Image 1: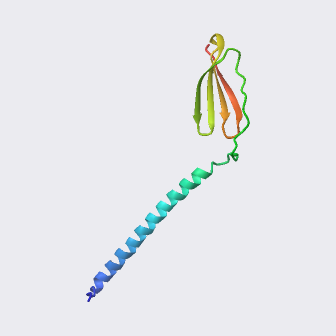
Image 2: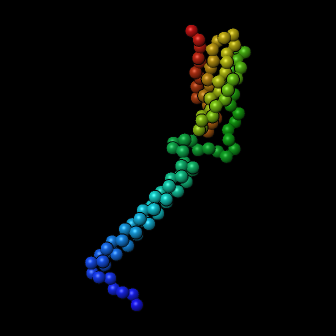
Image 3: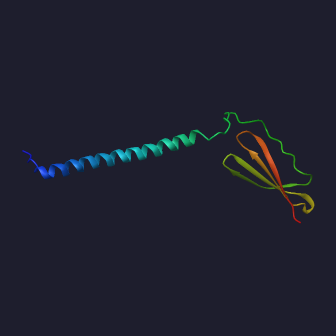
Amino acid sequence: MAEQAPPSHRGLKTAVWVMGILLVAGFIVVFSTIIYRSVKLGSQDGAAAPVSRRGFEPVEAALAPGAVLEAVVVDGDRLAATTRLANGGGSEIILFDIRRGQELGRIRLSQP
């Protein structure tokens, strides 16, 4: 037979059980929030346009005459293509939105 705890220990025992239940509930909330946010982040990207499964039509970007493609860098849904212009004319960076398949703009870097 189990012994009855003295009345002063019953309150402590109850407090330990309640705190244990609160700890377990807290861990469940934290881990379920982490899982929910990671799934939500992978399936949604702010206000970006929906991506079709087949992609987009080819994008043509006209380079200056004699320009040479030096580097291509992808960051998220952006692509930056760096070109070196002919005859020491500096460089140009062409920015693209990968999701929409559109050219966003150009940045021309020239030497004084």
